[in-house]
Image: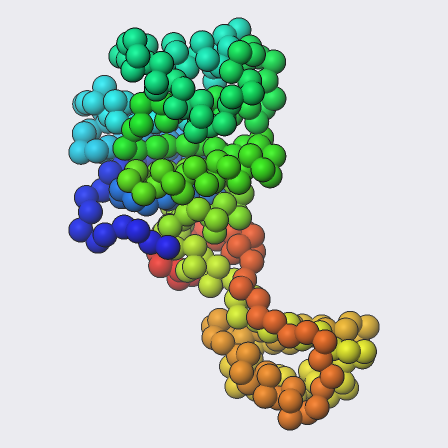
Length: 327
């Protein structure tokens, strides 16, 4: 679903970014870009360096080495220009707990320089977009984790920034709230550059145009969700569910097919999973074999692949950058 024109200038440009805490290197030589109209998913296990990287991009943490430009401004030398152009939802969505949601958003609006009618309109629009109408007059400390997260989202979008940086935007939300926030992100992505960190792999397929994966502070993958899922050993695998027992020679016959790497199943099972070599499509060959052999089949379908398998494989490797879905 790529919406990004090739010639569009990068809204966020990260170059050789590093962050040391004493002898510990939290972020190691990370480089990537985010363009307007693009949603980039930033993935990695806990402690990978995601939040540290996002804090450096937003100017809340100074890099040890490297450079970040946001909307053409250097974050280290022009931090106020950068902050005017970004909306930031940090980890934990910190707020003043004794304020109501409305009072907090009005406070943020005043900090942003809005006054009078414009301030009221900005606050009302943010409340509406984050679907906070039922809790606007409640102290933030009394809200659920999900509603606190949505208050944080409302403050990030209040000034309608061209660039959004969100750390776990759906953390703590129930399934309905996650759907609402994802729809909002899709809508905003039409004219914004959006960087979101997440540990929810389904979010990558749901809303992201591109994904990067970081582990141990090092960038390990940069590509599309389609390229990511295509790296799964189950990508284009064919699952055959038989009516009754598996025919005695089925597994052997399937293994003889061109492009078949392996067959999983066997004794006591009612199905076989046929794995292709290099992710190629084998469904035509498998279907023809099943018809020729006269197998009684209840269901046959093609697996898309499993993101969690790919994620584990990438984040437990020791090699550095892999781009375009190559391991």
